[in-house]
Image (cartoon, rainbow, N blue to C red; front, side, top):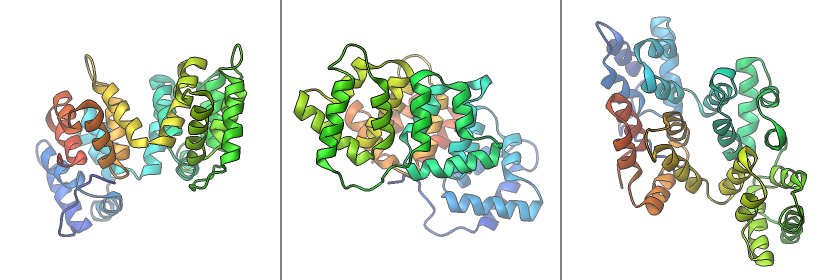
Length: 316
């Protein structure tokens, strides 16, 4: 469920393009007007506005936004202007680049997406950057973490809800044998099962594991693995069970303590607004006894705050 509030009366992309052009004209930019338009347009509308802007002014709206805005607001708005696959591709490219290497962000994007989303952003990645996503993962990640990410982006998984219970029990046994039962860990088994099984199947493995060994698979992963490999396995598992709960936790972590991890804040809000933000807000409120909007309000300021809160929609 999205949180995006789109005007009740359909707007014309041409009108929006004209309004944006006016907001850029003259001395300084009317940032409030820009936010008021773009934060309330869905993916299709944003794409049409860009086409109209180019047609009317022979100018690239993204380049114009980049020159008119700055800092965190610029990052958030530019991410927002892309379609989901293009946005994921750009976030991944930045996360896997030498200067801004952020393997946590790359892991979160890859391991929280569905197989069909992964297929699409892999194609977009190649068409945008003329390099395969696998090549960049190969270059920047290492060890079991790298093996898991590579397996995860190149294996096609079933996306339906049917589950073979016997198979789930077999997988649970295999994971127990590969982890808690032995000294050391057989990482290969974890990589194979986590990269090949559907989300519904992983949930079934988890419940079989719990029934058979009295422990959760999550606890087993935590005790048997570490570092980025552990993070990737846990992200896959949590997103199989409840993606909204996973993202609520990621947002909370980005805002707790001193300072705010704005890169993560922007990434999660912008990428989930049109997917499941209502559920994320509900999970956030349930777990942290505070509306997500209030947390974001206290961690941000100015136009940047206005933009993020517009995407989040009203408190319910």
